[in-house]
Length: 310
Image (cartoon, rainbow, N blue to C red; front, side, top):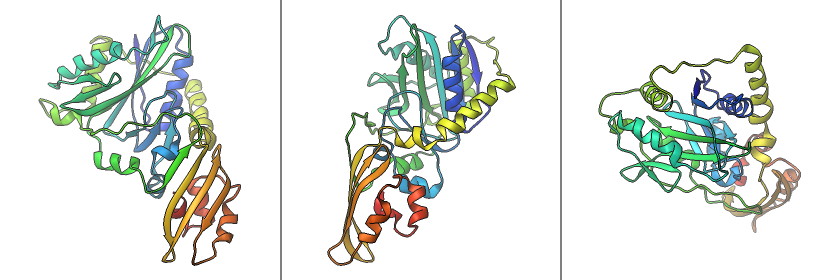
């Protein structure tokens, strides 16, 4: 096994890097480590709008990314270590213990007693520290991907992924995230350690103390950056995928009770009703039909009313 650690903290680039290594591993098993700037990352087949408070995330300018594997929505920041393992596999069935057990051994070296929980998670004293997912699209190989909460801002994590008063009913079969209480690994370390210490024990556990970092060349970085911008920064991959649903919200507009009902297909508002018994909202209703169900687009269209639709 060889390892790469990304020097970029752009979550779009790092998703593209993982994808590049998955499709170009040249029969090598790989450990990839990276840290992202503040971002929210949803599973490949999830409905973004069911998982993320887009109004709060949009106001904060926090990017939302759709990753390559399934599983739940996770929060990334500079205190969260992300890892991917590309390995040979004789089965197309998920086998999380194969990769999570070595991580528990690595954490023990830091004085942390973590356990495998719910099949695909790691926990300490009942609190989750790691969410994991896998895919088997290439015969004989598995991509295992996970997060490790080392010193993340847990208050922001809860803030960005909490549910609003709006109701979203998906029309496609999507995997919803399971909410659990979380904690940081650093709180349990026997010494005042850094996220780089965590990276080092993972490398030693999976590869050995003499492991050497591998590098990509400029043409490869250019291909990865191109994919990062075209796919992972693109609206189609991140927002329109599995975005077929009904939206309902009871709200107030100019002090009057109102309600909003939208039919969204592939991220486009196909039909909608914005109704109040007290004021005429038909003009607003007509404005949104045919528009992307997108916080930034609707904010540009109606900056003082965007909160009605999220």
